[in-house]
Length: 636
Image (cartoon, rainbow, N blue to C red; front, side, top):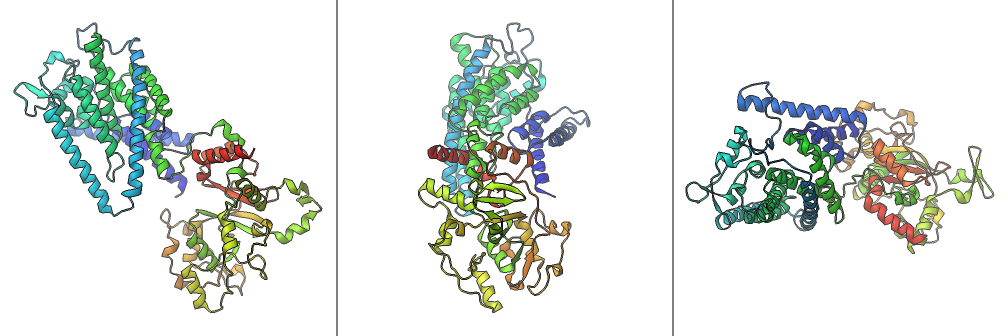
């Protein structure tokens, strides 16, 4: 019952889905590691692998029993079966692939990377259009878009099959590469579509369009010499456009199988050209179709390790390891020259702070003070309910620092220009403070970038709070109560305040989660200002986490049941020793803390225990770090 366990279950679920679909438990585990997780450790590896194995063999057990009636035989490992790649018996000139073919595979990888980059670019533009013009509207608009895509897809498939398909003679048993495989051959030949062609002929375009995607992939992998180059080129173009348009709809549309089908058509097109126009009759078209599928899918998703293992496990042919790996690496390198993978693009569009595996070396020019957020929303160890409600209703932070103001204590430790803390002497100029950081940033930007500064300076004078409970409750409902009273009761915020007065030093004591504060308010954990905090009710850990993972929202709280003048002692529920870093900590160390420990927020505390900022995952995304690096280079 924690966020870490929830992340582990998500990682295991992603691996189990891929493993069951392709019958590839190891590939599913590597897929979760490569694409589905931002936090990984050795214990999670075993859990995810066990989950993938269980999913694969559970599906295999039931499918084998249902299809063949032999329960426990384990004959159907996955939902997608690519069949066995094998030359026809007696054809000694046929080889699955040769060293000469590697040169063509590299070229196919380059073209696959270019096609994948084009696919991602077009889909990104379409996704941005949907985010701006479709998603904000009513749900019916998204349903209408899905219906429009379905109607246009049906129309294109029907018209293309009628006008562009060729009527070709039915292949005989000896025309196929899989003559020794009656199961695969019968399943492939039985899926041939006549579609208004004369007897003993079939429509090659309709055979690809009007079959399920898995069957069409089998056709391209194992049906030899039955598709013309024109048909393959037109099918590739149309399916490329339709797949790009479909991915990102409000309904699940898939990416893996459509990309494999596009790539298989691309590979068969290359094989037909080499056979027909160059005279390379010895090549095995199924291998080129498989490599084309790997090249296109690798250019779209930019996966290397996991996709290699998935395709090897799906084909049950270890000799394909080298060509698939080389093709995927070339496709990834080519596509990375233009944009990111499709998953990363959609993650960025939705603002999800999914971290990379490591930062660039040049990012070590930055420190924690460069990327932290100095504008803090904080709470005191003993805070009135009216302040907590105001903070929670006007902010959306996941956690809040617990602080006390130490302006009075600072004078006791100051001796000239030396600051004494715990018998350690520091020069005052070497201690980073919130005011000093704001002054540095305002000087570099030529204006105050801080919304906190503008809010403090522009905020009108807050009237004295009335003693009437109903008036205070009305202020809470209207969100007009300021969460923090003036530092100096006899003064109001003004332009005459110095930076030190606006960003006063705060001693850090711990972190408390938003869900914990809401739980305390709902359960009435508070005490009167005329009583001691010892009279406050105490909640156990099980009571605090009873509503996990769907904690109540602050806007669901009935404010009429609360007394705004009551005080909440949050010290028993805060985390008094969270992970912290110094302002001078390098970004790479901060990044490794988030990656290895699965953190969501990291306080930045100076040498005398004052919090000067906080770092979240949003502060460690690649785009944010690049912007901060550009600012850093401009100020040097």
